Image (cartoon, rainbow, N blue to C red; front, side, top):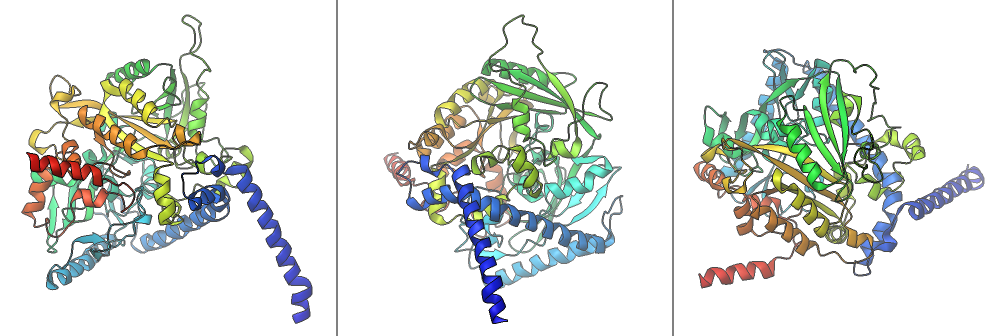
Length: 592
C-alpha cells in the first residue's frame, strides 16, 4: 500500500497541484491589474489585487454557487413541509404557525435582555459580511445581539388582493421564483437576487419602475415588529401613520422587523424593451423627463451612461407575447453577453448627424424573469473589474453557469487592511437628486469619480408633509411638481474604479465623497446609506429628516436600546477619518 502511494498517488497529486498552480498564475497574469496601483497603497492590498482574479475564479465563484444551492435546497425543504406556496386569502396555516414560533423566539431573547437590565444597545446577530452594504466590520462589538436570521419564510400570497405577507429575510430571488409563475411581482422588485425584503423596506430599495411607484417603502402596507421590551406592534398608514412612516429608512433603530405585508402587481411573460441612445447629458435629461411624464409612460425606465455624454435609455412595457418582428432575447442565460455590454452595443461611436436617417431606437422582448435580475450575473458592471475576461464567450460558456460571486463572500475574503485600502481604490456611491439637476450631477460625477458606466434610475418622491419621514422632498429643491404632492428625482450611481486609480494615481476618496455629499444636500437630494459615508452625524441630519424617526424612537423607548442611524451606517474605525471635521464642528458650536 505504501509503495502504491509513493509510486502512483503522490506523483499524480503533485503534478495536479503543479498544473493548478500554473493555471492559477496564468489567470492572475491575464486578469489582475494590481501592477497599475499607486505605491501609496499597502503592499498587502497590491498583492491581493494581483491575486484577486484567480481567487475569485477558482474559489469564490464555486463557493457562491454551492452556497446558493445549499440555501435553496434547505429553504425549499422547509417550505415543502409548510405546504408552500401558500396562495389565497387563507394562506398556509403551517407557515403562520411557524412564523409565530419564529417571533416567539425573538420575544424570549428580548425578555431576557430586559431582565438583565438592558445592558447594551441592541443589534441583530447577523455578521456584516453577510449583508449587501459595503461595510465589512459590524460596529457590533459592544452591543447585545439578537438572533433573527431564521425569519426567512414567505407566509402567504393573495392573488386576488395582490398582497404578499413574508418575513424580512426572504430574498428577491426567492420572491421571483414564487411570484413569476403566478404572473405577479412585488411592486418594487429590486434586481439583485440576494437583497432581502427587510433590507429594502428598512433601508434603500429602488427599481426601474420607481419613476411610477417611488422607493420600495411605497409598496409596504404593514410593518410588524417587536420593540426593545418585546412588545409586538402591527402598524399601517391608517392605524398609526406616525409610526408607519417612521419605519422606512430607519435601519432597525425602532425595533426588530418580524413581518411585512407588501403590494404586488400583475405582470406579463415578457417586457418589450426599447433602447434609445442619447449623446448629451441635456438630451438624456429631457428625454427621461418626457418618458416618465407620458400618458403611456413605460412600466420600466432607466438609462446607462458610458461616458459623460453617451447613454442608452431603456424603456420597458409588459407584453403578453412578443410583438410581430421583435425577437426574444433571454439576456440572463449564462452564455449571453452581460446585459450592460448588450445595451452598450446600441450606441454609435459618435453622435449621428442631424438628418442622417440613423435609427433612433431598437427593441426586443425580454422574458420577465431575465429582466427582473438582468444585473445579477455581472453585479451591474463590477464583475469585469474583478474578472476582466468574465464577459468573454469562453469564460461564459465554461464558468458562467456558476453565476457571479456573492457579495457577502467577496467581503468575507477581505481583511481589515484590504478593506481600508479598497475604499480609496474603488467607488460605490449613489446620489438621489432632482431630475432637473441630472446634467449637473453627471458633470460632477465625472469630476469626482470618473468611473463608468453610471446607473440612472428615475424615482418619484412623495411629499406627505409631517408624515414624509426620512426622505422628505424639500419644496425649495425645485423637484416637486406644481401640486406639491410629488416630484421626479433621479438616482445616479457610480460603481467601479475611479479614473485616477486606473491611471496609477492616488484618488482622494474623502474629498470626493464629501464634495458629493455637500452638493447632494445643497440640491435637496439624498445619499444611499449602504455605501461608505464621509459625513458627520450633524451633516447626515441636514440631509435627512429625522423628526418623525426621533419621535417614534422616543415614544417606544428605543433611544437607549438601539443605536442611532449614524452609528449603524457609518464605516468601521479607520475607514473615514473625520476627526478634523468633527473638531471644526465642535469649535463652531463653542463659538456659537
